[in-house]
Each structure stands twice: as C-alpha cells, then as structure tokens.
Image (cartoon, rainbow, N blue to C red; front, side, top):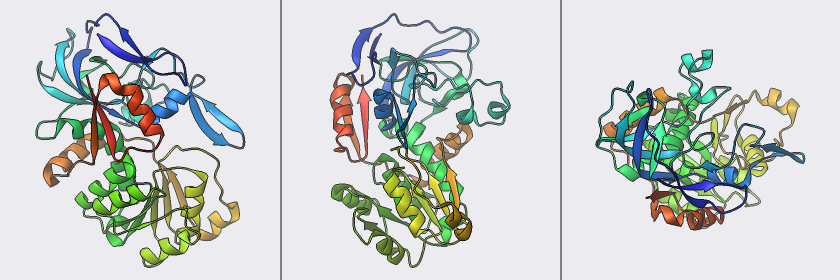
Length: 350
C-alpha cells in the first residue's frame, strides 16, 4: 500500500510503499476513500506545541514515534475483517473514530477514550489516513455514513466532534443569546453549521483574516469582528448586546485568550479548543472576581460522534467549504494550510 509518512519533524512527508497488512483478531482493513487535513497535522509536522514562557511540549516526549502516517479524519471502505471482527460489511463506507484509548482504564470504560492516559490515536500515535489503506483495531470504531456526503463525513471525526462537544459544554446558553467564537477556520465554520442545527441563538465571530470573516458571514454568523482592531472588545460586547455568557476559542492564542477574558460576562464561561500556543494572560484575582469558568475541550468521545452523525442526518447540516486534492499533493496542501490560505477544510483522496 502507498502511504505518505512523516519521517522527520519539519520535513516534507515522504511517499512509501508498504506491505498491505492482514487484519488480525478484531481488526478491520479499509481502503481510504477520503482523508481530512487538520491544523493539528501542522503541530505534528512541527513536533510540538508552544507552551509559553519559553517552554515547549515535545510530541516525542508524549509518545509520538516516527515514521508515522498522519491523518485522523478518515472515511474508508471495508476490505477485510479479522477473524474476530463483526458488525460491519465488506464494501461499505464507514467513518473512523480515531480517538482510541487503551480500552481498559476507568476513563475508557466510562466512554471517554479521548481522555485516556495511554491513547492509541490514529494519525497521531498510530498510522492514520494519509494512505490508500488503514487498519482499525475494532469494528466498534467504524460508523455508518449512509446518507452523508463522503468528504463532509470525514471531517466529523475531528473538527465535527470537537466543535459539537464544545457547543454541548455551553449548555442552555446556546439558546439564550449570542455566543462568541474566535476563529473562522475549519472549526469555526463547522461550529456555525452545528450551532444552527442545535437551535442556537447565533454567534458573533472574531477573526483576523478578512476572507474568513466573509466566510463566517456566509455561514450564518450574526456579526464579525476583526480581532486586531484596537476596540475589538467593545465591538464584541456591542455585537452581543452586552458581555457574552459563553465564548469558544477555536484559536487558542495569547491574543484570543486575552480578548475572551476581557469580554466575558460575570459568571460566564470561556471554552478553550484551539492549540495555537502561548501562555494564559489572565489575572488570577479577576478569575475569582468575575466568577468565570475556563474550561478546556479536547476532541470528543465516540458517543458524541454518534450523536453528531444523527444530528447531521436529521437536520440536513450543510458541509463547510471543502478543497478536494489528490493524496499526492499532501505536502502542497500542508504548505497552503500553514500559510493560512485554506477556507474551510482540505480533503485528500488516494
């Protein structure tokens, strides 16, 4: 099989011919049909995350081993099943849930494999979808995508379930008034689609890129704010009719974190999703005085992905803008994404 593998951090992915694996036990072998490209792939390519204060999180220290086939937003067609695999049919397309844990700890048994301390994430810690074949350890991680556009379906494995999980954390505030979203990339545009499907009031989007602000308006944003404007905080508060109760940060930079904290209402909530990097600029006494909740959102669990696919079918959620490309163009697309020139998401096809 042909795969594009990261063999050295900060170097282009390399094409490699490998022996097609034969599924064992509960494993399932699939032919890759569509593979989404996520901003997290850039962090993987870079080898880590900026923690601020001059510190850096090394992915090697977190268990990432090279060479590695990236790609964690994957739809595949079942080719072969291991002798103990059941519940899926050869020849059918399935969305792969990539956030797989050890399956044995209390966190996994509670259904939150995305929080497992010993994860087996596909495309992160095990080979993923930037290939023409992929092996999944168990058929329970394969979800039927019948009735959903294949390219759009691939994106629900990460950008979809991540934003859905973040929106759920906002609770009733979604229907009580405008929320604020930072970033109109793949996550932000996906969130606008899902917010409407969840009968949310609407969102004001803060974005520094003019083209992406236009995309946010086209996707249904109530208003957009340039995050670089000197009066961005005042614009946010004016657009939401007062300090907002909920702000979801799909960027996760020091600048967006500062804007979030300056804008949020007393008793409000900031949900951190993005991993751009840096250190929090908040004053500790003001966290208490504002009674603000700052909550992280890391991916989503298998149950949430099932809920999301049901929502997409029931409410006919339209896809975000998608740039289709051949798998052989993976490095070109990564460079384009890194330059900030992608509106929506890239989907690769072998």
